Length: 218
Image (cartoon, rainbow, N blue to C red):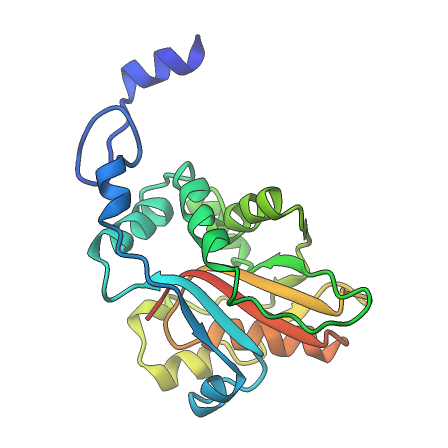
């Protein structure tokens, strides 16, 4: 009953403005999702030293509608889009997520944390929503293993070198015995600087393998 009243007062609008749902079937087809995988060697060439692999459901630059979906999810406070975006991450994992074949290497999902001031202003952490949705679909545990030690500002407005510098030592691991394999989850990665800083904090406490999972790269 309450949901029906809310729909009347605040009707849902899709990415292109259609009323009734957050995303239409036609919009899903137009997302142009081409999965991306950057292995360790490629990441090292880009000065990403701690992340072992980065997997993205699509390209941020090549899909205007995907860009709009991410921006709507994050800045227009539409957490309902998180389920949709998480599904795209899950769909691209077969064949791309290659984990070490070791005993007890079941991966744990870890959302990239927001500083508490950003989380308070936005009302939610988009990475946490994505991680929880992926965890439900894959039956993987979600653990908030990281904490930001300081504000790092808006990375989107910075050049590559500025991004790398801004996140240096900005994260600490809150667990003394984390899982050996951690999948870091975020909505977008441009340079990989934030994910690499998170991976560095995790490896300091003994994590062996860290993979970044994002909706979009670039």
